[in-house]
Amino acid sequence: MSIVFILIGLVLLVVGGEFLVRSSVALSFKLNLSKMVIGLTVVSFATSAPELLVSLQAALDGFSDISLGNVIGSNIANIGLVLGITAIITPLAIDRDFYRFNWPVMMIFSIALYFFLSSGENISRLEGLCLLIALVIYLIALITRSRKKAAAIEIEEVDESLKVVSNFKMILWLIIGGVSLWGGSELLVEGAVDLATTLGISERVISVTMISVGTSIPELAASVIAALRKEKALSLGNLIGSNIFNIASVLGITALIEPINLKSEAIISNDIFWMIGVAFILIPLAFLPKQFQLGRYKGVILFVSYCIFVSLAFLG
Image (cartoon, rainbow, N blue to C red; front, side, top):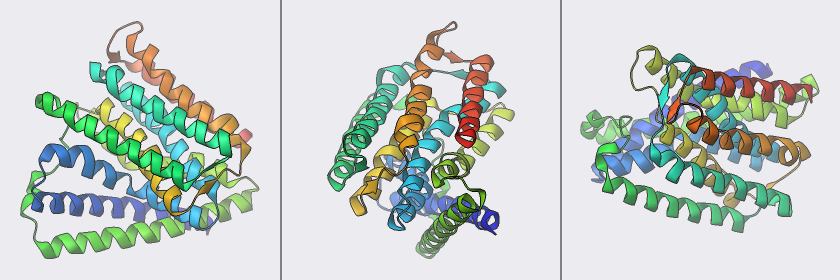
C-alpha cells in the first residue's frame, strides 16, 4: 500500500504542479507582468511547488529528514540524472553566464545550507528568512542582468496563449493545482514513511532517492523528449536556477513556517557533500577538454555519479 500511496502522490504532484504553473502564468499576464519576469520568477516558483509542499508537509508531521532529503536529493538528481541523461542524448552548450553568475550563486546557497545545518543542526526561522531575502536579491540581480541582454533570455516555457484564459478557468486551474499538490504531498509523505518502516531503512534514504527523483520527473521527461526531437533540450541556467530555488524558496519558506531539525547525521556528513560535489564538478567539465560544451561522455560521468550516490544511500 505504501508504494500505491507514493505513486498516487507523485501523479498528483505532477498534475498539481502543471495546473499551478498554468494558472500562475495566466494570472501574471492579467497583472501585466512581462514575459521575461514571468519566466524568471513566476514559473520558477510554481515549478518548485511540489518540492515545497512535500517538504512543508514532512516538517509539519515531524519528519525533517524528508524535508531536507527531498531538496538535497532533488538538487543531486537535477545535475546527475536530468543533466546527465540529457547530455548523453545530445551535447549541451554552456554559456558564459553559467560560470560568471549562475554557478557561483548556486555554490553560495549550497555552502550556506551546509553552514546552517552544521552550526546549529537545524534551519531556524531566522535562517529561513535569510534564505528568502538572499533569493529576492538573486532574482533582482537576475532580472537586471537579463534586461541588459534580452535576446539571451530563456523564456520558452512561458505559453503566450495563456494571455486569453478566462477568469473562471484560471481559478479552476488554481483550485485543482492547490488541491492536487496538498493531496499528493500528504500521500507521498505517508507512503514514504510507511515504506521506510516496512523496509527497515530511514526516511532520509527514501527522500534522497525515490521522492527526489519523483519530484524531478517533469524536468527529466521534458528534457529527454526535447533532446530526442533534436530541439533545444535544456537551459543549464534554468536547471541551476531550479537548484537555487529548491534551497532558498523550499527550505526558506518551510523553515519560516516550521523550523527544520537535522535528525539524520548522514545528511550533513554525506548527502550534502554529494550535492556540493556534483555541483562543483560542473566547472572542470565545462572547460575540459572541450570548452563550453557538455558532451556525451561528460553526461555519462554525471549519470554514473548519480547511480553511485543512490547505490551508496541504500547500502549505507
